Length: 311
Figure 1 (cartoon, rainbow, N blue to C red):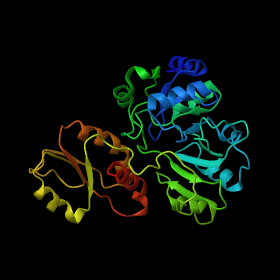
Figure 2 (cartoon, one colour):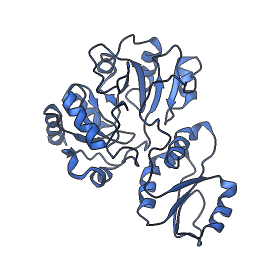
Figure 3 (cartoon, one colour):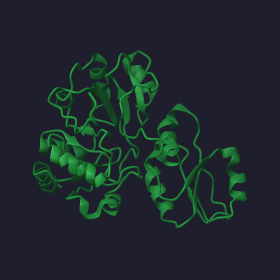
Figure 4 (tube, rainbow, N blue to C red):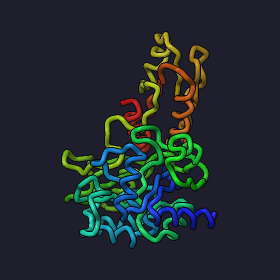
């Protein structure tokens, strides 16, 4: 793997694209300091130019060098959760161009914990812009195989680090305003954030910065999908006349053409989610029915992804 990491870093230095594993999902990496490299990343992703990308670093010192006015709150969260599945939104440093911020005055910063991501970031020595390694708006990749399926020859190298452990994208916290605000839920919960900050974390505000994953429809399979409350699930199956695939907590139902049973524990569910959606998408059904998870705080990240996938 060391030779592959060195090769990947050299590709990035030349302005190429490298897909690499993180603990959340696989990222499509480009040298964040090179406008032409990031432009190619946007082109391959088919990503809107006003949609910012998260910049990844090996450590907090490298990340905070790309920000200004780093608050005590940012330092507390970094000390607790970095490396890990947390993105902090801060005011960008003057040296940071609008090509990675969607033209905004804020920047998303993250220090991933996956050992392959860490090795690459240390070998590269700078910031790597890395949204998920798939076409924009579609189901995120959690294996190297998913990346190959989605991007094929549009990426110069794919580093294989096995299945992603977390399985959904990072928690995003906005610290560029007067008070911390949660922009995207993930494995790290609001309760965990508030315990570190010893203060409330607001919900997303009307004037919050644009950020990764903030569209109403995102992380979506190609097959139309519906999120169905548990108490309506049996009735929904009964009335369907088309070919249906199901993602649910219960055992398979013989009335359904394709059924995947999911774990009842939120972290295990999150880890399997995107692979499950991809499998259901390949089942050649006309509709995917998804049993809604509980409305409990620990399920917030999963609910967010499912609501957007069915949006």
